[in-house]
Length: 197
Image 1 (spheres, rainbow, N blue to C red):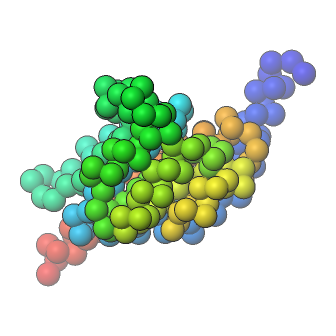
Image 2: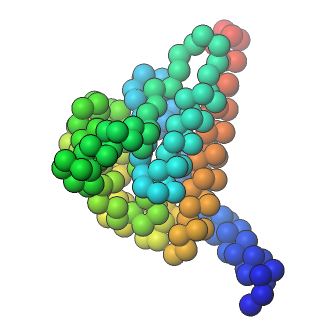
């Protein structure tokens, strides 16, 4: 297989997988995030590697991209961004605790724990989801493959139907952007409705 064929094959795989995404689940996630916004609950986003990068990216989109003048704002935190705290927990306790211990300090009932894991089996992600559930938080996940153990710990879990990690990560970003776009649209519609009254 030459380079051009490999590229086309990969892009075809992305396109075919994209066509199979359960868009209803994306809409469910939008609903969870909009309710958290309306009720002023906090959304905590976390993951490892490429999923950590997406957690930071998604928090940036929600935290900055939804701002409308001086009105209410999204309360959203990426647990991936405090490197000193992550390394302290990893060094002094265990890497499995880097998200769970942060959540133990911060999460409250009806907050949202938003986990991202391509495999759905990252131990530190699973541990954090358990802390969230024990605190009465709402749990949301982005995964791939068959959802892994994470699927059973999430109230809503979006599973990319693929066994290819690169495809999964590509579509996780697309899903995050779709969620962000829909959240912005819902917020804009509600603002227009308020001014119309």
